Length: 241
Length: 241
DNA sequence: CGTATCATTGAGCTTAGTCAAAAAGTGTGG
DNA sequence: CCACACTTTTTGACTAAGCTCAATGATACG
Image (cartoon, rainbow over all chains, first blue to last red; front, side, top):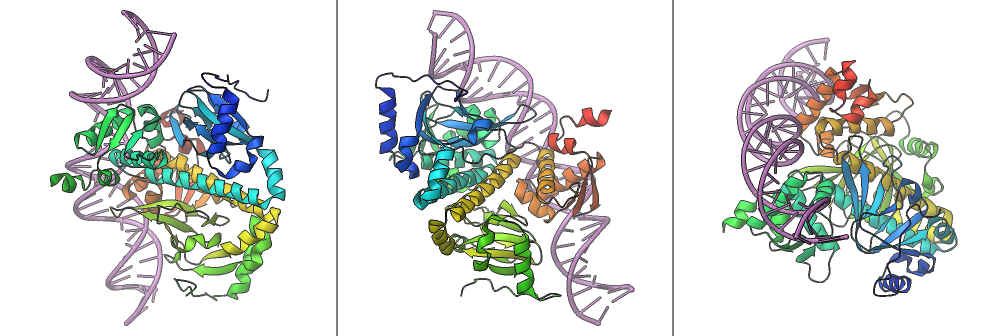
């Protein structure tokens, strides 16, 4: 009973384990030296990666796909407190109070998990590893701060705008103006603390105004970054000329 | 030009330096062993403790008083992204993008600052210190997460309610039902992402309903914790009987 | 090809923001 | 100690942004 969720390895076209291990080694990240300790597991869409209890036992690294960390309120409402994209670490220090669980949001989300006790022990003897763990914590801190700044914005238009900019920055695949949103409108809504309808309306609004293009429902192309940053306010001044 | 802001030591009733150093040593915290390295400085209300530039050079520990970390938006609106209370560390890893500055919010806010390069060097050779730094990072992470959960709440009543509960938990001076709010309504508003008037109304509402008592404008006594947790929703059910 | 989920759009209602003014503290100097 | 100016807090009236409910289109998936 090591894993509460039993993940099936999808040996679709390629030999799973070896392929993912290679994927991990080619992606530069702080714990590179500890990759031998990592267990690599692919998850299905919606599958639980870790829940409150297990989070203290491992550090996780998202190799591919996407995941969300959710907190469920007493009223049944869901809040997405963290969005995990390729290259992100998670699972370090979930608040004691928030019983947050992490779920895969894309099909075939691949996660490497490092056993916490082992890396702690290694950090005791290897200051380089200790420093890397610290750097990872800072990285997570910075991600949370970004999220905090987005949530603190007032209008829905601003929130959606800065969300798109954040996605653009974090999914930077060379071509930064074209974003493949990894999550549904529902997820965006719960991530930004607004209703689904409002997210949809904000996107339509931005599209109508020419700030973005919707190549498909999940693919956004940014036309005018400045409009996304500033929300409604200065939009008149910008579109007026 | 070590300090951009020149703080005057207030040798009010007691010898400043020695008094604060004693205060620091009596307050248990992770970097206790490094207190000899710390520079202890008292600040006036509104005084800047550190700005974006300086934040990378030091780790800070708030000994007494209170401070706020603010980000100023392009539209001039202020967001308080972190509230520092006695026992809190800060200054570790401000996001690159948020040019946040930390300001004292109470008169005579005393802060210990540890030079970052020095402690980094020490962490290289002492795994115990390395671990303590990590623990501090997790502590900050947990604080940010709490803030994220509060900001994610929908109604203003819920936000104010959970803010009071957070204050109650963090200012736990034995008597947890009586809270001495360290910040103004304006600050609360910018911390929760609502307007001042809304904060005031929410407090009045909670008072009228009997969930809290306002002993003075800045002193709140919690009567019914459950109402604060749940916001409006179940309030009828609770007060109805 | 049908079904379920996701996305968009509209109409009415509620909440919170804005503007404005009064009330309550706070601190200063006479 | 009081009067004064200043800030903070509260309350009211109006307005607007976003939520809810509801219906329709689009997509994905078996």
